[in-house]
Image (cartoon, rainbow, N blue to C red; front, top):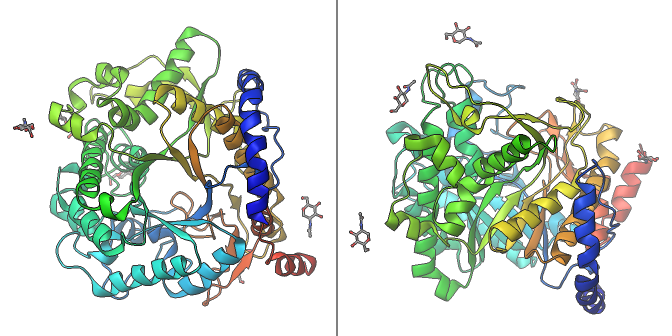
Length: 524
Ligand SMILES: *[C@@H]1O[C@H](CO)[C@@H](O)[C@H](O)[C@H]1NC(C)=O
Ligand SMILES: *[C@@H]1O[C@H](CO)[C@@H](O)[C@H](O)[C@H]1NC(C)=O
Ligand SMILES: *[C@@H]1O[C@H](CO)[C@@H](O)[C@H](O)[C@H]1NC(C)=O
Ligand SMILES: *[C@@H]1O[C@H](CO)[C@@H](O)[C@H](O)[C@H]1NC(C)=O
Ligand SMILES: *[C@@H]1O[C@H](CO)[C@@H](O)[C@H](O)[C@H]1NC(C)=O
């Protein structure tokens, strides 16, 4: 039935590509002026072309649990959470325990109708010391998970490192503060062992956030920063490390891509890319200074990675402002990095409104934030806007996609994360189970993806964050993004479908879970 819908919509789709162009351009111009919801009601996937992939995601440290089982050694996230650094003192020790529930979870994904599941491999589970010996039990786990997915016809989309670098390498040489070959060797093991079944590889998740949060602010692992920047760290250098770390991540990414292309892609025929956190940025006023500030933030945030990947060098704004603290992309490195992607993954949640903030350097120099020199806020009307959850600004995703299409040569992109948190309470609170806000959010953002595609963006997939509740990197267990709720007070971590799970399932054309969801909701 899904096939028929797709076929008949294909012609419709081709026709509207042309006619919607004018409307879309108008929409982009006008929606920018208001915080409004994209106005395309999307109730089923039939409007999307055949081959468009709908999925949901997770990451190893956030969902697996079994943190000290079967030979796994710590990642920098284990160290960080065990130092009590989360707001709720939470850890990923057990979390949703997917390690022991993967069969049940894959069945739920199948019943939901997912085309794909995006997950990550825990580097320190597969290769506990970061390099050298492979842990056979780690290998078995990922083979089992991948086989289970494939047996249900669900594509595995695999991130090699979702911010959870091995602690061993951090201790030995500062992790990504040094250029190293360990990532490519780890990637080699993954391609060799899993590449016959995994056709979509992501090297790093949000490298543009990793070193900014981990080495400038120190609020994420490895928790490094220097006075007066960041969170009172005991070690680090906020003026240099964010740029150095990002540079090394970029080179490690490019080396892994080269390896995949040289050694595996010809026979395995997969795709490889990288996933960037992608805010949209709007100037808060029409003043030239604020417009320039917005562009500067886009350069620091997206251009930091996308400019080297697409054009082979850092953005001119960054080179000018950061000067010698920005590592040089040598001619050879530039060649290696340029074009080192088959697709770009985008994680999108927020829009920032920015004002120019005249740059002030201190006697301690300047960090990534001072370098960017913008004043950020979540809303146009107020500098700080609290709220129960994320605002629905789906026009911002459309603008982001159009910006990337125009500025970065229309790369193949996949929205790898987009989702809506509910806060507080236990899993069973009706407010989190009857999550109509999440449904409205997803519907609206999926609609904005469609609008961007109609004006020419080459979007290949959309993944809801997250498939089920898990340990969240910012909030621990205080916020939940899952289509499925998990009862974290229950030793068996029972899973329960939220209303949004039912909605996504019917959107995808599989409605098997309907009875279970309605009976849960009506018993409330
Ligand atoms: C920063 O660290 C010092 C020494 O460890 C401590 O005395 C001080 O209270 C900390 N400041 C903050 C704001 O955490
Ligand atoms: C950070 O590194 C720069 C360049 O090496 C150096 O000049 C500066 O003193 C360092 N800052 C700290 C806090 O170590
Ligand atoms: C750059 O690459 C070329 C060709 O592979 C090599 O001959 C040259 O030594 C490299 N240059 C540097 C500075 O590494
Ligand atoms: C969640 O439920 C547990 C027991 O099931 C209870 O101890 C706890 O107080 C509840 N938390 C909240 C925030 O309601
Ligand atoms: C779910 O929430 C919506 C709106 O918030 C409300 O209209 C509906 O009655 C609720 N359904 C249940 C089963 O609580």
